[in-house]
Image 1 (cartoon, helix red, strand yellow):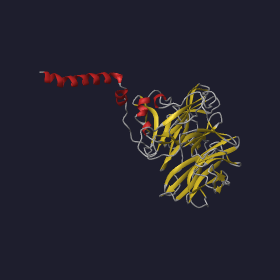
Image 2: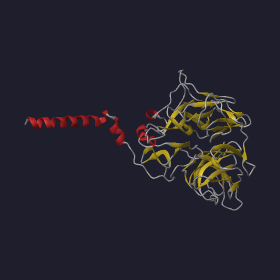
Image 3: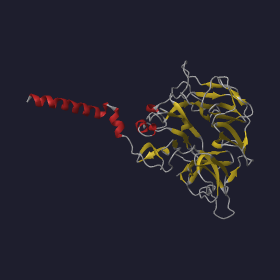
Image 4: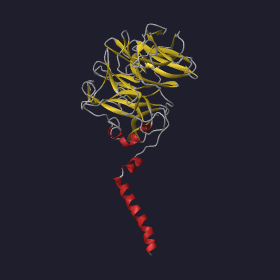
Length: 434
């Protein structure tokens, strides 16, 4: 009899402990219970960055375009992304202010027929996209990357234009500022990187003059490093590369150390930010210097705390009245992170930095937001932890209200396709966009 009691007692107490923890004392059970099943992505692989381009569309009902041959047309904002092929996301209806300007897109969906012509007859897959004020650009790659081709499409155009490239090597990346009129291309030849550029009125890329740079180890180099970002401010272009930051027309911007810069973004207050790979330190780009951004607490700097993937995006929580006036409640600068470069890690996803809601400037008084207190997941932190937080992210983008009234937040993962944060089965969640 005593033997039976000895055997039963541990089992009994284990059952009591399990019952207690399952009642909410251990959050792991709640995390497992709230985990959402993954869905197959509509856009697979490792999608490109996302851009918005104003497309001239004839025949849309909501903006009173007619269907006759000579009927007037209207311009609608469209979100583009590529992964092998080209995908676009646009609304079927639009709400407008009293002056007729689009203020929100309603019922946005993928690949709506808005007259975009088939991609050019170039072999290979689309590996990058960019947009200037007047053109949408796509970069295609054949095979292992030796052969690349660049094409562009004018808003409302019927065919893609081929862009000439007379240099050696291949184009690896393209960047442009949507408010500007120049495209910049990162070209690699025999392991050395160069920057080429294209003005909207030209049909051939031209090499950008970049003088030799003296790195902190006092070794001069003509290798710019791979082009990783571009921004336009006060009539000047700023370029981020893996070897430093370059201001077009002026030269290299001083840095006290050799840094690998993974991405660049311009904030709403016109501050330009670059992010370093190791540690994810944020730097403010001035005309002649780069400065790490300190926290208000002193003795520390604003950083992701993990390696930065280069994904940078602006996110906001806002509302709009009937006259088109926007009221911003919160703003964030969001940066993709990677827990490990060598092993599988579930410590990926992104982190957030607070911005001033009114001005969009960095709020150095607030610590970075991690998995447990991200604002962009609207309280669904556990769901995020078991889904997108597991994946390295190459690009992030929040659709503007004029494209999608819900301002859907998108993420291009490295290998698992395009994801989005939206309501599915009555639950807000990160999952593959489908």
